[in-house]
Every structure is written in structure tokens, then in C-alpha cells.
Length: 100
View 1: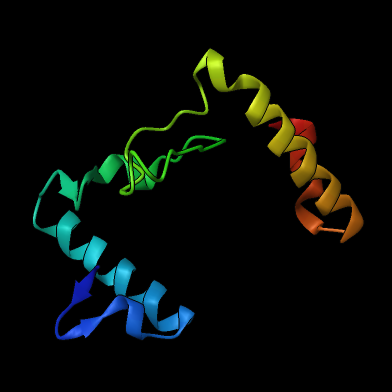
View 2 (view 1 turned 90 degrees about the vertical axis):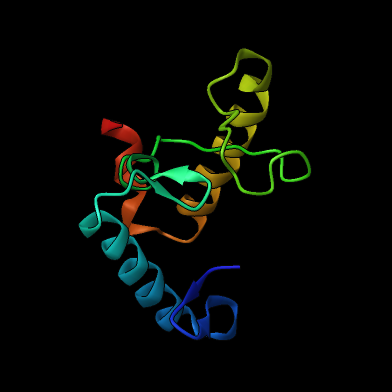
């Protein structure tokens, strides 16, 4: 559970939650710290294209499994579902599949 001051992030609206996480991350950056919870600050700023986590073994989502060969079929299946959903909903970000 992430806390920012006396507020618990899980007690907030989505907008408030994002604002508190960003505020906490900015404090970490200003303080020169290398970690924000279990992840490095760099891991929050530079996100990989795809992320896949085993939430039972890795509830903090630290070890990204998306790049491992044994999960390639699963990642491909999720990508196909995501792309189909984007096409069905006329997602304006659908064009990113072309250049990424």
C-alpha cells in the first residue's frame, strides 16, 4: 500500500491516486534516491513496450516476464487480444502498432 502523507492511495479516486503517486515519485527524484518501493526509479520512467508479471510469485511486479522465450506465445496472444479490442473500439492509439 502506498502512502503519501497521511493519505492511503487505495482510499483515493483514480485522479487523486495518480497525483499522489506522481508527487511521491517527484520527491524520490528530488531526494536523489534510486528506488521507489521495490522498483528502481528508472523502471518507472522507462517502461518496456510490454509487461507480464506472475502476480502470485511477484506481487510487486518487479520481474517482467514478457521478454522471456517461454512466455512469447502468451505475450503474442495478449497482444492479439489488445489489438482486436483497439480495433473494435476505434482506439485512437491503434496507429502505434505500425511504428512500435
